[in-house]
Length: 207
Image 1 (cartoon, helix red, strand yellow):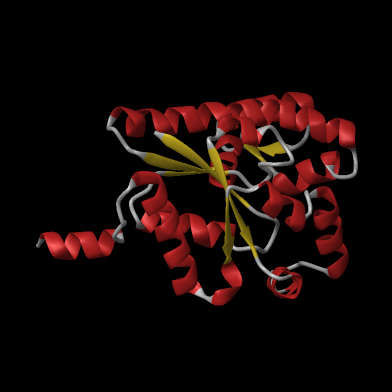
Image 2 (image 1 turned 45 degrees about the vertical axis):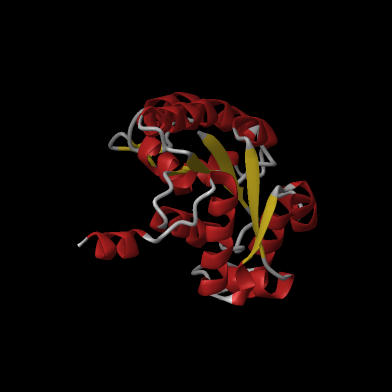
């Protein structure tokens, strides 16, 4: 089974692209979704032990946790040491049945793939990208986002140009959904030798 890492800077369209891979029947493990689950389960007592007062009713309070770790590299590294192994274990558990079933391809959706050790976990990497003005417009449209927050987030991420240079595949998400779907289908076909069909199309044809 080929493991394809999917990543991209904030506002580049990674989540939408991940959904399109899913539409084509490719198993996708979403690291962000895994974190949300872990913060409601296995990670909560570990985070509370490291950062007292950051959980409520056994669930990590993300705003309180942010107050503890943002702007503190040592605290952030400590949090990563707790969470990253749990995410990797979650991904392994998710992929196991797909591997056993003979799935030719699976995607690991890893937001900070190049900023962490994510590249070592996958065979190939897809980077989603868009022109800076498109990215900025998307991000500033998010509730509570400001120019200052946006620039701080960018400063912590590997530059888009560098990510594109390191990638095996680059998908431009600024040209509309159909363009992204076509690009995803091209990647799947190149890696599996078969042109994929969206799940809805496949079901319709089987009736």
